[in-house]
Image (tube, rainbow, N blue to C red):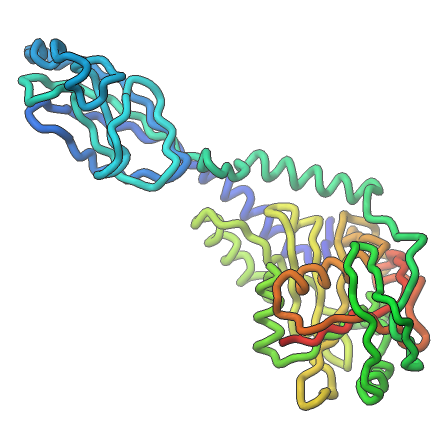
Length: 397
């Protein structure tokens, strides 16, 4: 039996996937009589980007289309289409197009049909229409099979070793626990160029007192604490949201309902619950994650966040642990499968820093090297990881 820190979470997501596959939209068929007595016939069909329209048409039995088919091309509503043929508009004010072949819809609209004639004619066409719903051609979104295939490939890459590797030649210009600093900016593995800032002595003292690692409910030490954010809860949540992180669901039952509703509304489910870990004698206050649709079962960027028992300049201080799930491995506590993290945890710290930097919500960021830094360790399930030991310190606007 697979235990992905919460077997119910896996069941929820797999069920959502099965529901989503079952609800792939089917083509819709329509039949109309289009009369030449009026310029346009309103079909009553709303169109969405990505829809494909397939037409067949024939002259109604007994209809007299001679006048319509004899009109000269320069007088037709659509000179490039045959006289007396079927034409269409994808909105009230759009230009007419030929309906003699498949029509690919690129913008939302409403379908009108007409006969390509310069004047009213005693002509009528029987039209059969098939509407196939799909992704917008202008900005195609992956189809269901593509999403599942990509998720599988993402998992395989993480499972069989193509994870991030540490920058062996990287120098650490972080502010050390003593408060000393080099004059050059600190260069991160991901290429971030952060200025070196000497932190306030009181803030350094408080950060030094934070446990270096979080633990599970049984006291087994796990992920390292690798970042600090300073700002109110509203500011923190706004910054994290602007960096495109999603709040992880907490309750598996509620998550199941949300996954189903998201699927029904054709939205991706990216908020799979994460396990409870502890710091300051309590479980995380918030969990956030980033993932590609369906890959969230096996691979996701995620972090846990705790409100610290101290403040800085009357601002709330938040402490977090960020890791990147890249596949599955055996949990030494239970013998079952659990998430495998990228052993280069610094890469996830930089992923967080990069997103916050791009969000425009961070006033400043720097690195801080505390006393007794974590550089080689194992998480609570037994997975090894390594780090340069630095904490990312973020001051929000």
